[in-house]
Length: 508
Picture (cartoon, rainbow, N blue to C red):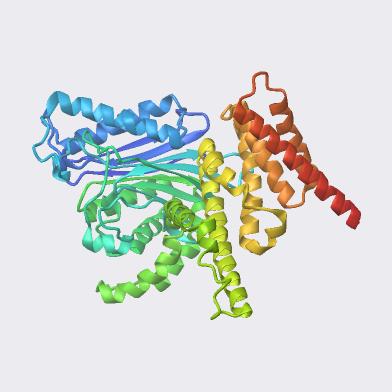
């Protein structure tokens, strides 16, 4: 169907609103950009008769829109880093020109021109497409959601809070934010980036906290969206109904942008949510707003609501696991000491048990490292951070994985290895077409594709990719020591592939 969006933009009091939004449907050939900004007036003074929050949200929205024009609306990790610096410098220039720095410089209350941001770059519909890769960027407590006809409302981004809270706790406690866009941002404050894969039709939402913070429970936000949809005959009616509902219940500025993906027309979209709306009415129609009555419902609802939040935190958890496991790897001295060879209190059987135990612990450390590196390699590749994926994770995986120990990793990790190979090929193809990858990176990708196919006994494919990588290093005019080392590795891998081929042919 023709692309459309639902927009809600309501001020708590006329002329006093501090939210801003961004919607670019026709500005870019490949993507639609939606975004919301919640100005934090209570934390920042303003000028020219406007609050600091209003100035901050408007300037951030304008700056983001202009900045993304040069990237045709695309987002990735590097673009987001540059975007943060651009918005920060814009807010700082405005604040320095009009507002004296606060004496409360060490506190959150001392920040000038503060705003949140939740931004999504959504690929335009492609005929026959079944998957969407949506790029998300956010900071503060504004959120991005996916509204699924099967799973319902699903939060895609976590809130930046000084004390971690889930969506149910947030409604009742509302802790202070840990970071946001500001003219006085700390060095370690960063805009988050995430590449989210969605494989079914649904709706992407960008929302400030006025949309969800003052409802009794997270599922009430979903019910509001679906009830107004069910009562509407067209897009305009749905938008008008949502605006009226929020006008009646508002306790803050309300900014919401909803963009559907994967639907032929409005009626097709409406029908797809019928069963979900009926499910909510049957299972989450709780008149009692006592926390004791709502808690069991939240535990049930969060199973699907928080599904995508786990992937947001996966990177941090996996990185922590890598650091812990790397520190836990026993050195050769630790493994061999204390010596029990001359200890008469331990018999031969006891010595074997100790050796088995040490080997088990070492194997577990290695297993955990492999699992962590696989997760992190995938995340960095999906975020187009190719150099980090290779240097930090693929090169660390290389000495750990061997054909003979592959089966001991379990089916889940074997599947991760196979998925990694497919992702590498996709990145190689995409990067070559769009010049994301230079020759060195492309060759590294070919080597690791060859290596994974060698592990999985796809020897013909492994040999083809490895030969391409080897020829690249062999033909370098002025090879560096690093080039020579990589060339040596390709020759070693080719030899391993040939050896395994001979064994396989002999068995046949």
